[in-house]
Image 1 (cartoon, rainbow, N blue to C red):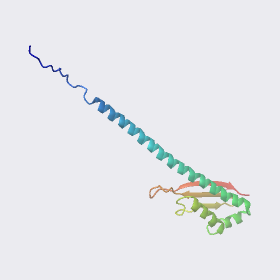
Image 2 (image 1 turned 90 degrees about the vertical axis):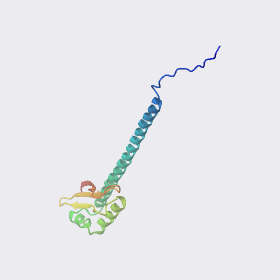
Image 3 (image 1 turned 120 degrees about the vertical axis):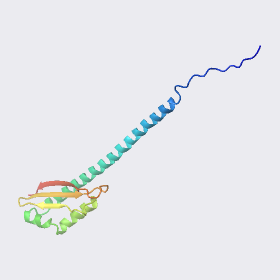
Image 4 (image 1 turned 90 degrees about the horizontal axis):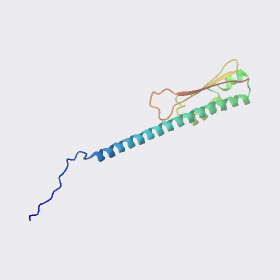
Length: 145
């Protein structure tokens, strides 16, 4: 009796490499998820910085109003004390410049009208803003009597 060599029949490989494709698609989906989370984190940091600058501007404007309330509240005195050349304005402006970025390029405005209404406008430019970007601003209005 002669020995026959037994070789199993091979089936055509119809699903060869499917698992590799599944793994690559899973990695792609995971990578897109990670990139999405990173971009959300970057947007969150930007929004937090903007909120901090707005709250600082609000605090500085209210600090100026408090200074006006404590001193002589006559309209003529307020107009004199808080014009751009007066030391009271310069001191406050230096605080603003030290607290907010980009203030040096556009100084804050303090307008005292004849009826005692004071309008304070504070401008700032975030450090990450591209050149030519318009300044952010905070406007506060109070009546000092």
